[in-house]
Structure formats: structure tokens, C-alpha cells
Length: 127
Image (cartoon, rainbow, N blue to C red; front, side):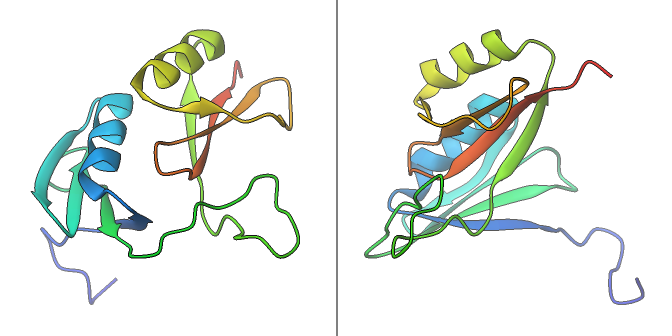
């Protein structure tokens, strides 16, 4: 892409009532680092070149409902993370502050909610 020069970053921004808390959760979950934090935003990065998660403060934040419910806030994005041991990965995420969703789509997938209520998936793929 001609508009993308060397050293330019890329990432995903997600809303949260407490950006620092959410950034620290994902940093611990993924083994990444919080590379910037201020009251309105915090950034988690895999490396200096990215990828990044930008956690942005949202006044009046409403956590999405999963599975979707008519009339409720729908999940607009979610993260999928491949894991080597599903049960262990779920235990680790819960210890960091995640909660397990009551509805699960498949045997090799676990839907969890991060501390701000965003759904994310841990996926075991033996293939």
C-alpha cells in the first residue's frame, strides 16, 4: 500500500469505561505491553511495529450482549485467539478478570467477556 510508509502503526480501537484496566487485561492475557496510558486512552502493543489495541474511554459505555439480543447493544467486533490448551487458557483468562459466557458455539471455542464486557474467543485448533 503506497499510503503506508515503513514504521507506521496499525491496530484496532475498542471502547471501555476504564481504558487502563482493559489495556492491562489484554497485555497480561497476550503477553504484550501497555505502551501508552492516559485517562482517555491506553495502548497495548505486541511490538514497536504493532499490532496495537487502543482502548478508548467511552462515556455512557454499554457492554455488548452475547449472544445478540434484539434491542440490546450488539457486539460490533470481537477478538479470536488461538490457544494450545483450551481449559488452561480459559482458567488463565478468568484469573485475569474475564468471565465465561453462558452460551458456547462449539466444543473447541470458548466465548469469554473481558473486564469491560466485550466478548472474545479462545479457539483450540489442533490442525
